[in-house]
Length: 290
Image (cartoon, rainbow, N blue to C red; front, side, top):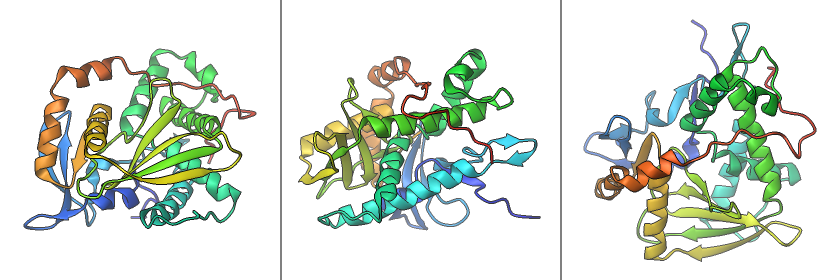
């Protein structure tokens, strides 16, 4: 049987997930709490089942006339390569940061914003919204033959592009934790209430805080996070989670599982807004055609 390319789509890039890998008595993996199933377990990080909790078959690959349209997964792949390059430099606190060309910097900025909407949860919510409210198709600008899933993916592309424009040029503070870990979840980027700034988990010891720069070029600083800041950020990460929370240490995971069971997490979920965005900076809506 012919192997399908890009079959398993990770909504958190593996280059990021790898930073939480630790060894149990039997194999390498990560500690995960499955929120819908209310189950904690140690997930494999190697082999065919590696990080299976963070992947779904064809999540970013809609079908048209029985053909799998691969362009969006390839689009993500180019962003992930740019993010991997940034991550390698930032971890060593390189200065200056280097980008091959302006298009690589732009791919990095879009890749950062994509972390806010490429989760399974967001795509499912948008797909259901489009199914219940067909008029949303007009906002996205998709063709009438496209499935609800495809329209949701095209909306995600618009959202990434629009937010990348909103925060361009970008100013970033990179926050390092020397002793304790940041958590990871299925929705690792979150915005301030007024959307003037955002936070992104990059590794178990690194978070990014971004905003629009008042200069004409990218600006960045390297900082050390305080214990109080780390605790607050981990609570926010937990509140953002919808399908799973991940940790390197089981005891740390246990500490934050309790937050999921509290009213604050439920109320945060009930009042959230998943955006369907009309193209503004783009001349036309982005369509998945191949």
